[in-house]
Image (cartoon, rainbow, N blue to C red; front, side, top):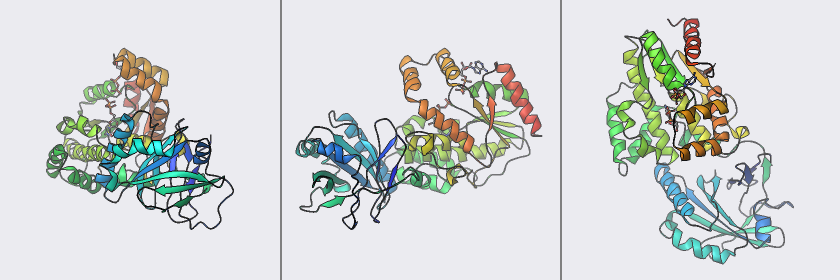
Length: 412
Ligand SMILES: Nc1ncnc2c1ncn2[C@@H]1O[C@H](COP(=O)(O)OP(=O)(O)O)[C@@H](O)[C@H]1O
Ligand SMILES: Nc1ccn([C@H]2C[C@H](O)[C@@H](COP(=O)(O)OP(=O)(O)O)O2)c(=O)n1
């Protein structure tokens, strides 16, 4: 199905949901101020409600970024753990800015769904907007906010606009930080409940804020897991007598698992600041020798965008979008090499590396789309862009090719 999104006729909100196949259906709601209801019904809710099903939307206002991200994650865990409520579909609202979930239950009454939901949401209710949906007059759906008697709002079909994935407009604010100040701000807000955030910030406090690169070349190696980054960077280190650095750097790596379990906003702020910490090491080392860096900002941005933008490649932000631009306050490398590999060969290497079967299977099955998006995103990065290198030849050939590339860039 082609992706379609809702843009509201009225100023109220824009809501979209991901369908089970990973693509996006749309569902929109606006206040009754839409004077001319369309003859066409909202495509998601009407058939479901007409068939005797029920639907609820749960949204979290996003004015305070960190608490909202945490509540959203807690809600997701609670809904995932509750069997029989159906898969929570992501829901976005831009005005007012909200994120949440839509729960659809074919063949279950609204009252029964509410009975299941109430105890689950009890603790969160003061901070949530919960609405049930009712069918009336054949093709009209009413939105009924919880707790407000008679406060019914008409749900109408919205203009279908093949424009942008609703998460695109939130990327800058919530996933791909354009400067260190933003990432620092998020981690500061996390100190009360993630003590490790203080550790990261203390290390960052000691780093120079706008470090300059030395005269020696700085080469970054990017690519998906198992494309050969470790192999290549080790060899380059030896053959170029270079210093090898990694992002996130060793000094914060001990906290990586903790941040990996946090919501996107916090997780990406950790990786973003990690890049700025590495930058100060790059600056210092590149006055003395060449520097090789295993992953850097391109990985941070590509993985963040690929995770946030559901569905296929067509949902990604357009070429030259601001999220593809290198942050102005981050030290730039001289060359970024992107190792590319066919899916089959990458799987073979993952297997021969002896990854546990469960992880390997999960990787194989669920990540085809994700992998495609990350690879495409690497290629869309700009200023500097990545130079793709075929990583399928034998190790020695790949190293040779990259050394040529470095020479051609007049770096050594
Ligand atoms: N050019 C190559 N040809 C065949 N196997 C390779 C090549 N480069 C790396 N490998 C092997 O593939 C696996 C993944 O490589 P690795 O360097 O660990 O990737 P990454 O650091 O990108 O995860 C390792 O077992 C490694 O020995
Ligand atoms: N500079 C970096 C490095 C990694 N990340 C994130 C992106 C992904 O979520 C993971 C990928 O890390 P992974 O452990 O697979 O990396 P390796 O291939 O083992 O080097 O880390 C990042 O955001 N920024």
